[in-house]
Image (cartoon, helix red, strand yellow):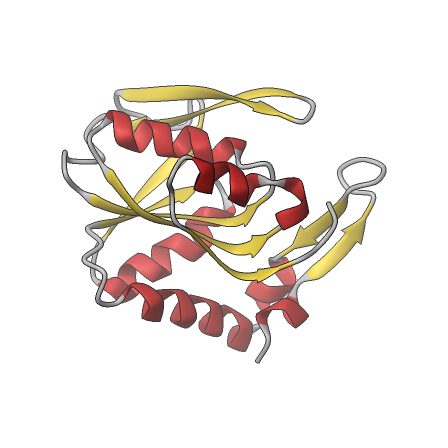
Length: 175
């Protein structure tokens, strides 16, 4: 079952000229969701990952069941002011502004092997900020995993230039 065939493209969202790759059609399909989680879990079954870290919000949807399948803990990285305990944060740039993500200060132990998961990599800014947070806490990035890669936007290349391994289940050309 090709994952890519279960992903909807919404033209001109959130602004003119953008081709939004919507995974809600993949998630609502029980075979699509199961296949996505199984393919990712299978890749990391023998990797020695200690924790799965998911980026808000679609990274939670994929990351939590992957963590469950791997028998490891799940850690959320959230937008600012969403986590209840002490956090550290990182600002990052968007195409049309900036944002901030945060993680609990007790979420990662030094030396933890981390699998970072999100639904999509475009420019790589959010993933790069998440990597910085994890590394600030002493975590070691095993790999950055995405359902979708938009190679023409350059995020994968951006992370690989910094010597991070990147894996995606599928890719779409264009923005």
